Image (cartoon, rainbow, N blue to C red; front, side, top):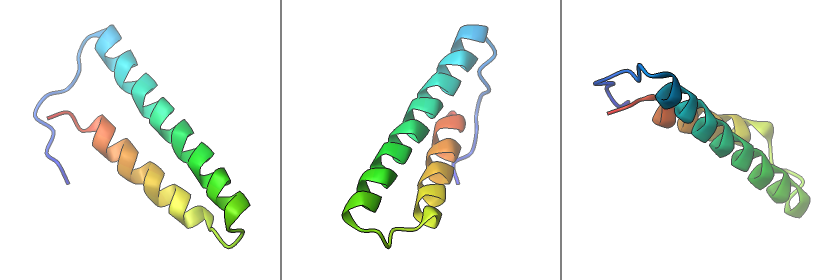
Length: 62
């Protein structure tokens, strides 16, 4: 896991982090449901794993 060296302190900087993280998670949902249409055996565990990785990556500022 990446080590966090600094924490965003400004309102705009924090809001920007939440927006980019939200967009990434939303993209994961779109990809998941597209995969689900093509392969019905796709599980939500894959979606949860992708979301967890993106949230940790986006929230950890280096």
